[in-house]
Each structure stands twice: as structure tokens, then as C-alpha cells.
Length: 469
Image (cartoon, rainbow, N blue to C red; front, side, top):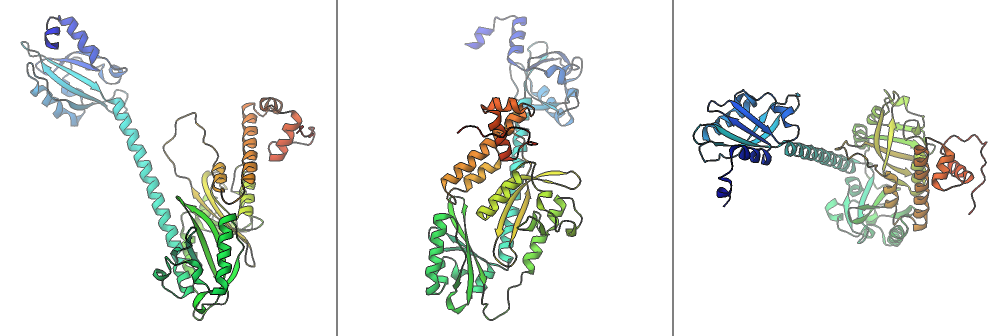
């Protein structure tokens, strides 16, 4: 047995064996004073143990751990190992306390105690990182729940009639009070009903064709249709969007011939937009600001809305290069943009990362563009060395089902070319000849691509001959 195998070892060999298998081992005299100490863990002696010799063991720990040391000294008996107890030693560097888990055994005959300890610093650091990650997740969940609540309140208070329809079954999943008032029925009776049944028979076929075309192409022209139960005529607009694993259709009804009764008031929606913590801004088709809420003014460091009106939005929104042009071109082409990561530059130099969702409103006398700017939450920093891919790649994958694969492939190829050129210029410190050689391009072809993507300052002196093929 192991007891018989080690019973013949001398004191020196036994001490070396104990020191080798423990992170710290102490010899404590009957008065509780440390007479000898051996450290096996890296850095433990420098961090906490250099001044322990000659001091009472109980004086080397923090106040809340003194009772545990007293219990270890009292429970240690000849041939009996105490249960493990975790104590904290003050750090010599002034940092976090050093946690060590001790067990003790009294030496028969002379009354001295052997205390062996295990270093718990690595475990404590891991627990701290886990706690920080959990707190970051909780903060993100809280922001998500808050945002969902705000947008649901906006959906309920908006004066515009909106229905959410399941794209596969055409059944109404959600309806706001304004739409229920327009249709003249309670929301409970409308939810679950085929959206086509909300229109007169002569208009139902046109609405059905609109929904079929929307599912096939991702786009559909607005149309005028007569509502059921003689509720008048309305302009029907529809947009396709994905939510979790399903596809839904957002149907917007704009009253043309309003039924008798007062029109729905929009003051509540305007007040909600003004009070939203996310930035909200409306521009004309030339990108000039028409209106903005207080959160947007805070992002761009302006005091009043008057300072922003008439100014181009890209004065504050977007990084250098073609990023803002990509945002507006996508918005004009597809009618909406979401999860577009960029930055807002304040008037006094502040730069904040934001996520943009935007929509184009082409109808009416004054076509406009609407933008919401949400500050990106701070998360636990990722490991060094990784570089996150641009969010515009995610936006392209979101377009699957809305545009042809040929268009997606072309846009993805353009994005990869631009990223490669930017990386080559950064690696070569903007040495274009070296960058062209690195990418395997001729100088003429490289200059042509620089002009194509609007990269660099080309004064026209370079040869712009396109590369073959």
C-alpha cells in the first residue's frame, strides 16, 4: 500500500515530495507561527509569501479569513487531515487578493503543523471573466428587451395603419390599433384572418397578385384597393422581411377615401419618436436633413434641430471612402437597409459606432428617407489578432430572395476587391506599385480599380489604361 511505501522515507525526501505536489507548503509551530515555507506555483512567493516567515499564520490573511485559519489550527490533529478551506492573502503588489485553499495535518510528537495549499488564482481569474461575460450578456439582453418594448409601443401608437402578415399563409399575425380602426373591426377578429379577405372582391384579386409578386421578386408596386364592409379606398404598400426562421410581409394601408369619423391623430407617434433613445433623422432624396430627434442631435453634438436642417447627412454619418455611398445606393435600389454598421462623427470630434436601419418612402408629394441610428453596445473584448468582417457582407446575405444571385455575386465581388485593395495599401504604407505587385495586378489595372472604388487621391497623371480581360 502507499502508506507502507512511503513509511521508510526520510524527512528530507518527504519534504521534497510535499513541496513537489503542492503549490505552497507551510511548517507552523504550536504557537501558530510560520517557521518554513515552500512555494511550487510560479510567482506565488513574490505575490504574497516573501514576508511570511516568522509571522503568525493568522496574520498573513485578510480579515474575513482569520476565522478559517483558526479553525485549521484547532482541527489539525496527529494523523488527521482537516477539510479544505479557502482563504485570501493580501497581494504585495496592491492588486486583487491571492486565494489559496489549505488543508492541515499535525506532526505527531513535536506539535508542529504541516499546511498544504493549492493556488486558486487561475480559477479566480476564470470565474471573474465568466462573471464579466455574464454581465455583458445580461446588459445586451436588457437593451434588446428595452428596444423591443419601445418599438412595440411605437407600433401600437403609430397613426399609420400597419399589419404583419405571414408570407406563407397570408394570415394576419399582428395589427396595430390604427389599422383596426380603419377596417372597422376589433384587432382580435382580424388576427388569423386571410389578409385578402379584408378587401372587396374586385380588389382582393389585385391584392393577391401583389403578395404573390412580392414573394417571388421581393418588390411590389403600391396599388389602390377598396376595403371590405364599405370602409372606403386605401393605398396598399407591402414589404417583405425575414424574422427568425420565417418570412413575413409588412402591409401598410393609407386611407384615400376616409370613412366617416375623425382621422387618427399622429401626435402620439411623433412624441414617441422624439423621446426615443435611438437617433432618428429624416432626409430628402438629396440627403439633406428635414427633421431629427434629440437623440440624433446628441450623437452629432448639436444643440438645436435648426443647426441640422438643410445640412447633408453624410456630413456626420459614415467613414471615409465609399461607405456612405454604398448605404444610399442600397437604400435607393432596394427601398430599405438594416444592420448597416458605420460611425457618427460629432461636431467636436467625437466618433461613435452605430448601426443604421433606413427606409425609403418614395410616395407622396415629398419623397423622403428615414434613418434610425442605434449605438452599438460594448461587449467583452475578443481575443487579439482577429479582425471582424464588415457588416456590409451580412447585409448582402440578407438580400437573398430579394434580388437575383447574379446581382449578389457582382456586389460581393466588388466588396472583396475593394477590401483587398484597401488591405494592400495599408500593408505597403500606400505604396501603389508595391500594392499592385502584391495583388498580382498591372499598375494600369490597379489605378483603374482605385478610380472605380474611389480609393486614394489620383491626380490624373497616372496611366489609366485598363488591364487586359
